[in-house]
Amino acid sequence: MSKLNANALPFRPVYNDEHALFLTFSNGFPLTEVQIFHYFNWQLMIIISCYYPYVEGVNVHHPKFGDPLFGKIVFRKQCIPALLMGNKEKIYFIVDGCHLYCKRFVTQKSQPEATESTSLPDDGNHSDGDE
Image (tube, rainbow, N blue to C red; front, side):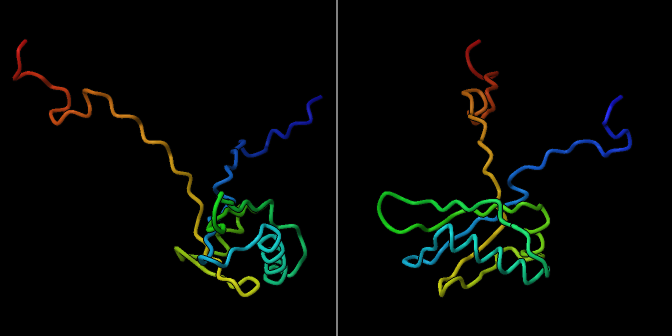
Protein backbone atom coordinates (compact mmCIF):
# COMPACT_ATOMS: atom_id res chain seq x y z
CA MET A 1 0.00 0.00 0.00
CA SER A 2 1.39 3.39 -1.03
CA LYS A 3 1.78 6.20 1.48
CA LEU A 4 1.68 8.85 -1.24
CA ASN A 5 -1.21 11.29 -1.15
CA ALA A 6 -3.12 11.09 -4.44
CA ASN A 7 -4.62 14.53 -3.73
CA ALA A 8 -1.29 16.23 -3.08
CA LEU A 9 -0.29 19.23 -5.12
CA PRO A 10 2.33 18.59 -7.81
CA PHE A 11 5.92 18.88 -6.62
CA ARG A 12 7.35 22.32 -7.32
CA PRO A 13 10.97 22.67 -6.27
CA VAL A 14 11.73 25.87 -4.40
CA TYR A 15 14.86 27.62 -5.51
CA ASN A 16 17.21 29.29 -3.09
CA ASP A 17 16.73 32.69 -4.76
CA GLU A 18 13.08 32.77 -3.68
CA HIS A 19 14.19 32.42 -0.05
CA ALA A 20 17.07 34.89 -0.19
CA LEU A 21 17.97 38.56 0.08
CA PHE A 22 21.16 40.22 -1.17
CA LEU A 23 22.86 42.29 1.54
CA THR A 24 25.24 45.22 1.28
CA PHE A 25 27.10 47.01 4.06
CA SER A 26 28.41 50.54 4.38
CA ASN A 27 32.11 50.69 3.55
CA GLY A 28 34.09 50.33 6.76
CA PHE A 29 31.12 49.03 8.75
CA PRO A 30 30.87 45.31 7.97
CA LEU A 31 28.65 42.88 9.81
CA THR A 32 29.34 39.26 10.66
CA GLU A 33 27.22 36.25 9.76
CA VAL A 34 26.34 35.82 13.44
CA GLN A 35 25.17 39.44 13.85
CA ILE A 36 22.93 39.18 10.79
CA PHE A 37 21.62 35.73 11.73
CA HIS A 38 20.61 36.78 15.25
CA TYR A 39 19.20 40.15 14.16
CA PHE A 40 16.79 38.67 11.63
CA ASN A 41 15.69 35.78 13.85
CA TRP A 42 14.97 38.28 16.64
CA GLN A 43 13.16 40.81 14.41
CA LEU A 44 11.03 38.12 12.77
CA MET A 45 10.13 36.69 16.17
CA ILE A 46 8.79 40.13 17.13
CA ILE A 47 6.92 40.63 13.83
CA ILE A 48 5.38 37.15 13.68
CA SER A 49 4.95 36.78 17.47
CA CYS A 50 6.45 33.34 17.84
CA TYR A 51 9.96 31.95 17.89
CA TYR A 52 11.11 29.89 14.98
CA PRO A 53 14.57 29.65 13.45
CA TYR A 54 13.61 31.74 10.41
CA VAL A 55 17.13 32.09 9.02
CA GLU A 56 18.55 29.12 7.13
CA GLY A 57 21.98 30.68 6.75
CA VAL A 58 24.02 33.80 6.10
CA ASN A 59 27.01 34.11 3.79
CA VAL A 60 29.24 37.17 3.89
CA HIS A 61 31.85 37.62 1.17
CA HIS A 62 35.27 38.10 2.77
CA PRO A 63 37.72 39.62 0.27
CA LYS A 64 41.46 39.06 0.60
CA PHE A 65 42.02 42.72 1.39
CA GLY A 66 39.56 45.08 3.01
CA ASP A 67 36.27 44.71 4.79
CA PRO A 68 33.31 42.67 3.56
CA LEU A 69 30.85 44.74 1.52
CA PHE A 70 28.09 42.27 0.67
CA GLY A 71 26.45 38.99 1.56
CA LYS A 72 23.36 36.85 1.24
CA ILE A 73 20.77 35.68 3.74
CA VAL A 74 18.62 32.61 3.09
CA PHE A 75 15.38 32.12 5.00
CA ARG A 76 13.68 28.81 5.77
CA LYS A 77 10.35 30.06 4.45
CA GLN A 78 9.80 31.55 1.02
CA CYS A 79 7.33 34.12 2.35
CA ILE A 80 9.88 35.89 4.59
CA PRO A 81 11.68 37.94 1.89
CA ALA A 82 8.30 39.05 0.52
CA LEU A 83 7.13 39.95 4.04
CA LEU A 84 10.24 42.06 4.67
CA MET A 85 10.46 43.68 1.24
CA GLY A 86 6.76 44.36 0.61
CA ASN A 87 6.61 46.27 -2.67
CA LYS A 88 9.93 48.06 -2.09
CA GLU A 89 12.98 47.51 -4.25
CA LYS A 90 15.46 48.16 -1.43
CA ILE A 91 15.14 48.32 2.35
CA TYR A 92 17.60 48.98 5.11
CA PHE A 93 18.08 48.11 8.74
CA ILE A 94 20.44 49.29 11.44
CA VAL A 95 22.13 46.25 12.95
CA ASP A 96 24.40 46.91 15.93
CA GLY A 97 24.80 50.51 14.76
CA CYS A 98 25.74 49.54 11.18
CA HIS A 99 23.61 50.07 8.08
CA LEU A 100 22.46 46.92 6.30
CA TYR A 101 20.81 47.31 2.90
CA CYS A 102 18.69 44.49 1.45
CA LYS A 103 17.18 43.73 -1.92
CA ARG A 104 15.76 40.61 -3.52
CA PHE A 105 18.41 38.10 -4.49
CA VAL A 106 18.51 37.37 -8.22
CA THR A 107 21.00 34.92 -9.66
CA GLN A 108 22.66 36.36 -12.71
CA LYS A 109 22.01 33.92 -15.50
CA SER A 110 25.01 33.30 -17.69
CA GLN A 111 24.72 35.02 -21.05
CA PRO A 112 24.86 32.69 -24.05
CA GLU A 113 28.15 33.18 -25.82
CA ALA A 114 27.91 34.90 -29.17
CA THR A 115 28.91 32.79 -32.12
CA GLU A 116 30.71 34.25 -35.09
CA SER A 117 27.64 34.31 -37.31
CA THR A 118 25.34 35.89 -34.72
CA SER A 119 27.86 38.50 -33.66
CA LEU A 120 28.25 39.91 -37.16
CA PRO A 121 26.30 43.07 -37.98
CA ASP A 122 24.42 41.27 -40.77
CA ASP A 123 23.57 38.25 -38.53
CA GLY A 124 25.88 36.05 -40.57
CA ASN A 125 24.07 36.65 -43.83
CA HIS A 126 26.79 36.89 -46.48
CA SER A 127 24.58 37.24 -49.56
CA ASP A 128 26.42 40.33 -50.81
CA GLY A 129 29.85 38.71 -50.72
CA ASP A 130 31.64 36.16 -52.92
CA GLU A 131 29.72 32.93 -53.21
